[in-house]
Image (cartoon, rainbow, N blue to C red):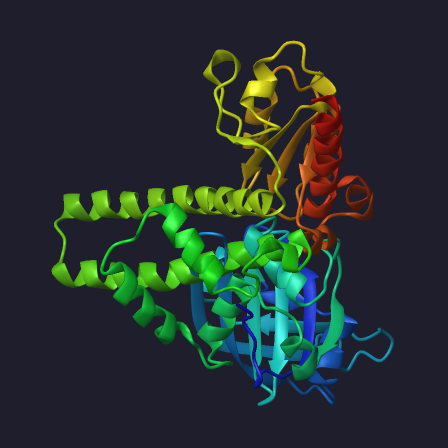
Length: 409
């Protein structure tokens, strides 16, 4: 499933990281995005003390929630009429729920649309949603200052838009959504309840660009499968939530239901990723065991070439591999270190972009290799990119070991 648009056209996009003086009311009460040359390129140069007022849609995004608000941006030169001082352009924003949610180091994306109005997107620092947005526009997580980019409708239309970006564009009304078609099909197939995770993952793959993992790069396939399921999950979940809301709640039942929704989201995301990578292993005829029991009742997500080989003390440990799977790492990556003691060099697959350098350095110290889809590599620093491996790289490693195992048997 490619989330494409044929009607999007941003005249320009300005991207920068938020500083404390722009986002922290304890540091500054100016309510301003401090001016950079990119703002001049985007909105034009205010002349003669002019203040340019731009109708604006504000959106704040993190991995769990979204907020939106309408307001204005005002662009002006704070040093106008001071001939002995260089211009200092500032972009004033109206206070709203979105601007009150932003923090230092969040990513600010300001887009000017074809109507000369603005869209302000603030994405939480180090979130998956930020990685998706930056990948969409071909940007690196290394952005430290403003950067002005022209993105044409043709360029956007040629890129597969990830679920997050599709969701953003739907919110803005910048593309025609096909969600109703998918909802009708899911209602007919699943009724008014989610099916088991394997069934829903298989359904998502049937709606994706790739029916078989061998048809393209495994990195592209996994990214597409995972985001397709995430997109379909949100459509169907919204339908189920609205159905439930119509029935009403008591205070206790509301809390209970809200917790069940949050738990389902977290559980489904992890199982979805495992289901799709397992299908890739199946398509490539890679031998593995899924969640086998090893020492101290640990259960690595994937063990290669399988638990029976692992339990044979005579089997060479250098031909054993394990893969942990986590949609986001945070501090939970350390859980992988105590799984499968026979394997000293472990692998961890994640969809998270822009993990801190300190954390990836610590992973290297503990012999943990991070496996990340190739298109997310750009969200890491150059030094980190040199160390990361892609899913295609990991498959090559497994196939090489499998060929060696075949010669031993």
